[in-house]
Image 1: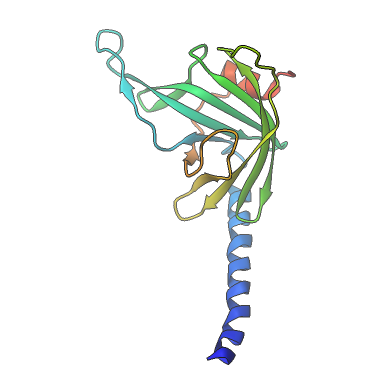
Image 2: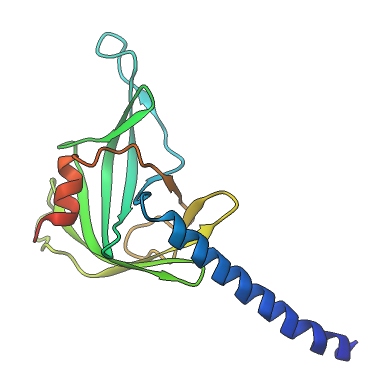
Length: 179
């Protein structure tokens, strides 16, 4: 029995490394052109019918992985109308800036809070540097957060959202503004 495990163990290790390298390659090919990722499970609330029967809103987190290694994160309200999703601009959002890099099986990011439209007394910005890891699932095409001590997002899944407009003022502030 022990001899069998000695033969199987190296094979299992090689297969797991092959899976991780494959996951990294898959993600590396997917990211260009698919930089914006939206939190998957959202609780959409419809707007009153007299305001706009096709509009709904949800609290969400949106992350962006730019090709130049910049990482941006938006936490706030998103709006959906006719399957198009937009970031709210001015409804209690928080913006984060940082950097990201590919790892075996996912993405590692470091970031800090750079903007809060509702500031806490004594809060200094930019905030402390935090880390977040995303695990890639090639079957579901999702990124799942793990190891997120700064913002409680462990277990949250993100999906590609290429429909988010590039001209969004919040996106520009999130990644281009020098704090």
